[in-house]
Length: 253
Length: 253
Image (cartoon, rainbow over all chains, first blue to last red; front, top):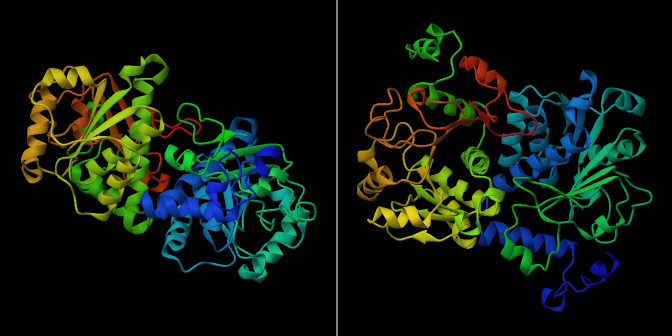
């Protein structure tokens, strides 16, 4: 992993022909652009795949048959950007998989994609919290796990404003397991700066491919949800990732 | 099944409170309208789920480990309407699952959804046939199976024109297994009229819920791909369908 990381030092792909399993923020953005612009994938498609795969990852780590009825609960905390949209789709798929998600989505995006994902969740009777309890123990008692869909790479905590920043501060104090989507919210996607002081997720679901900071993830389970990345794109970005089995949408790293 | 069918005789839902497992064409259209307008699901989402689930159904009946290398081939025949869009998404997912799909899509839709799905397949190097060989034996020899995504319910064969009608005539003569998406193309979705003279699929993948004509399906495998239909909608349409297991997107009927 160390040598794989050192091979990604240059942002210029031509200088980094060696295979690696992490993407810089610029590379991740370029990969997404390629999927949207060249392959003509829709944002709705990408968000749906990522949300579905994130929910599948939750089922792997917290399998339903092993959970008592009252422990099927999950709190999904969504930010206003794309990471939050994936969180909303994840919550809906958790509901379909017979978990009991609750959503906290304090800063709502005006993007029609977010609005539609929100309506889908509301119509499916997924509760939305109007505020996050300040008393951490209330959250620890009420939920089996928390899904962190607050901040993706390329979004600064300062940009998303008060409620999300306060939510992050609360998430840091929780003792129940944390599942972070793409990156642990608040971590520097390149360096993993804040890895010591910031969120310490038990589960990380890397979307498309792991970002560099994932090298500092020390939780129990790391999955990649990137089966939708075509082989040619994987080769172009020199990604070396575990293979997917059968019809699986995630692979353990 | 017979009593379930008789309970769907009235198109007015209020008159048919008894549970059943088939939808009339009008009910299927009403269900889809509900998903799109009330739940604000996107067509891209619905087509993606249906195409993915159809590909998963293929993997169940024709598991890859059981197929010699040269028998991973599938011909996907797509019409110009929504059924064809699902076929395009199915072909892409088959490619992701390491099958070797080839697409015949003679009457192209100008709908941006279809155009994007086509580009996705082209960029993933899925071959498109410019014509369907008239010599049936060539198709029998070249492909392990055919996916029929020509006509969905509510589309008359006459509407889709020459190439699709000719393709259906060819499909009738094939001896390799046929997988029909939603309904066997050309069947009357209500009565299954043409069930004797028309296509005789080995596998039927009902999308959202089975249409009435599925009662006359006599092939080996019938799946329903409708896990995305929310519980409330299932109850509203008094649908009684098998449950889905774990994270499965299809259920065998």
